[in-house]
Length: 453
Image 1: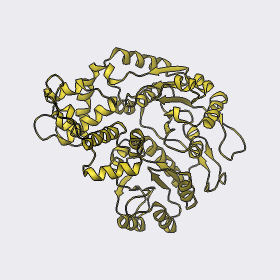
Image 2 (image 1 turned 30 degrees about the vertical axis):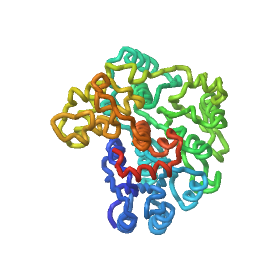
Image 3 (image 1 turned 120 degrees about the vertical axis):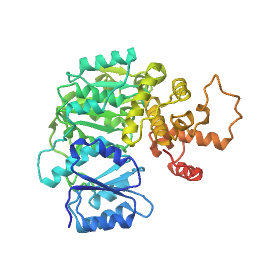
Image 4 (image 1 turned 90 degrees about the vertical axis):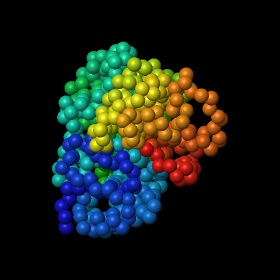
C-alpha cells in the first residue's frame, strides 16, 4: 500500500489545480485528479489518501456508490461529497454512508485549506483544531488590492483604521467588486492575522445545512450525524469569519446569528451547553441591505448589529482609471500561471477594455484577461481574444459600423456566456441569474458545442 500524503479528487472541473495552488500550508500533499470511474476505483484500491473529494452526479459515477466502495476498505478516510444541486435528502443519504461532509460546488481554496487542516488533524489524532493560514506577508502578496482610485484608497485607509478592533463590518457592493478581498485585507491588518480566516457562502446551502455549517453539531443530533462536527465559528476562533451573501440567510438563522453577536457564544445543533467564541464577523452582500430591511426580508436588529462599520465598494465603471492598471496586473499574473510569455494588449484591446460597461466588475475583467492570455496567437492580445463570445466588444463604439440585428439564438448564447462570466463559471448561480434550470443551461451549452473558458 502506497503512502497517504495525497488528496484524491474525483471530478471533471478544472479549478482544482488553481484552488490547491493557493493552499500554501499543504504543499507537501500531492493532488491527484481524475474524472474516470474505473481509474478512481483503482487508485482507491492501491493507495490511502489524506482526503477524498467526490463530485456527485458525474457521468458514469454515482457519488454514493463510490463512497460505499471506499468505506469498505478504508473506513477512516475522510470523504467529501460535492454537488451543484444540494438537497437535504441527498445530504442525509451520503452522511448515513459515512461521508465526512456534503458541500456545494465549487470548493474554494479557503474551504479546501480548511478541510485539509481538519483531515490532517483527524489523521494525526490531534485534538486541537487550528487552520494553518499562509504567513501574513505572503497573504498580502497573494491577495493584493490594485487601485489608484481616490475613493478606493479612502476605503482602504478606513479598513486599516478599524482592523485592530473587534467591530463587525458590513461590506456592500456589486458582484465582482472585491468584497472578499477587502475582508481579507481587514483580517491581514488586524491582530487576528495569525488566526484563521474562514469564509462561508450563506446562499450555497439550504437552511438546515447552513445552521450545522455555522454552529456545528453533536453526534446523533439528527439523522446522519454520525460524528461531532465543529462549526465555522469554532474553526474561526481567534480569527475572522466572513459571511458571504449574508442577505440570503433564512430569517430563523438571522435570529440565531444575532444572539451569537450579542452573547459571543454559540450552541451546537444538539448541544447541551453554550460555547464561548472570540471571532470577528464580516458580512458581505451585493444587495441594498437597508432596502431589504424596509421590505421585511432582513432583520432590522441584525442589520444594525452588523452595520457598525459600513464599506460600500464602487463598481469598476466608476473607477475607470483602474481598468488599465488591473489589466496589466492580470496579464502578468496569468502569463506566469499558464507558463506563457507576457503578451501586451493591442491599442484596440486596451481601448475596448476602458470603454466596456463591466457589469461583472473586476471579476469580469480578470476573466477577460485570462481568456486573452490563453487564446492569444500573435504579438498582441486583440479584442476578439478577450471577448470571443461577445462580438459587440470587438470594435470601439465610435468606430463601429452598423451591426445587423442578432438572431434570437445568438442573443441567447451571448446572455448565457455573460452570466457564466459573472458567476465565475458556476452553472447553478448562472442558471439562477438567467431564470432557467441548471438542466436547461447544461443542454444549451451542449447544444453550442463550445467549451466555456
